[in-house]
Image 1 (cartoon, one colour):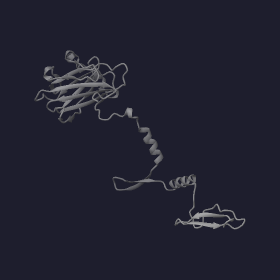
Image 2: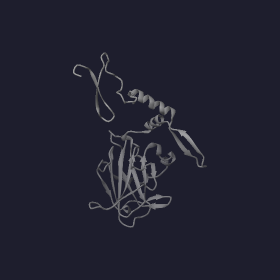
Image 3: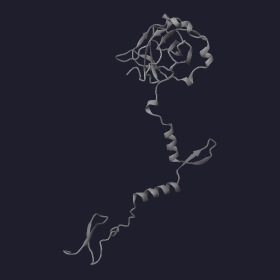
Image 4: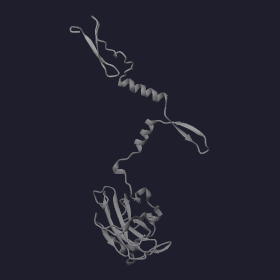
Length: 256
């Protein structure tokens, strides 16, 4: 219609229609003919979803040890809030370091006050510098360390106090080269009194490679500022010569 008005609409098959308007008739604002969909606003959709969740709460199906079945409502919002409370920052997550020497895990006070290691003062080797390895060789060169199970070959070393600008965490790596062994670690304060005792220290076996012989490695996290020295003793005399590499750093893993 040259001088008439019309409106255009597209049907479900994609065909375009032009429908002339009668005189005085306004272009419809409702959905076009053939479209029976009930279009809703975003707010209406969200409200319907909320109402549906309220009317149909999620639940767990739990089977008891005696075979009884019961259900328990699942509160997603509450569980998310609980999970958020347990999440810690990346700077608080320490993985792969064991043992962790922190004040709550100290040995009993009577052990610290007892006689232990002062008699070995002259056996300790200094390892005071961060990121710098100190090598100790065949432990039979040092005095045996006595325990209730007998005397043990041992190494004695001193890393000193934390630096003034400490992060609160010193990372200590011990690498044992030679025959595979089991070892224990005693951590001492400045008076050579025991603060921690790690029986059967966790040791990871690192295989030989093109640039290194195989070794066992212990990764110790020191969060106690009072720890300054260590005694590492072996459960039995090694069948061959051994060596111990000591390296530590404040706030960082000493081997980058």
